[in-house]
Length: 120
Image 1 (cartoon, rainbow, N blue to C red):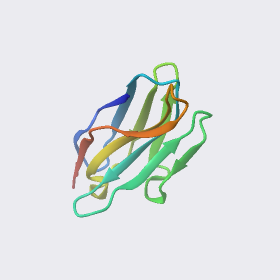
Image 2: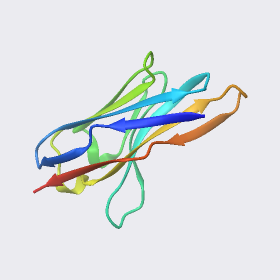
Image 3: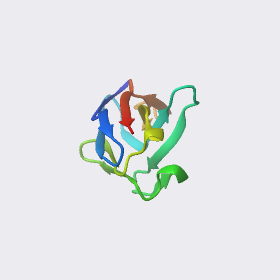
């Protein structure tokens, strides 16, 4: 089993910055891709950014140039640096990890979510 613990959400004014962190722990061989998704009020969950174990990154068009995803493989931790925040970035942000388990099967895991609120 893999546990993902997120931190770093909060309330910020438009134009401000926040840094989200997500640490993976538990029983697994390795963590492959990690990512951040978000779900705004009345919206479906969407991909924000994703990073592979080889540091290849993918971003939603809406956050390109403002958000940066990174990871520390030694700590099994992924970060999301969010700059120039906009009110439309308001959402619950969820961490996601693709883990290789000791059964040599892969599984997707989700964090509990951390709320980001951007005031105008």
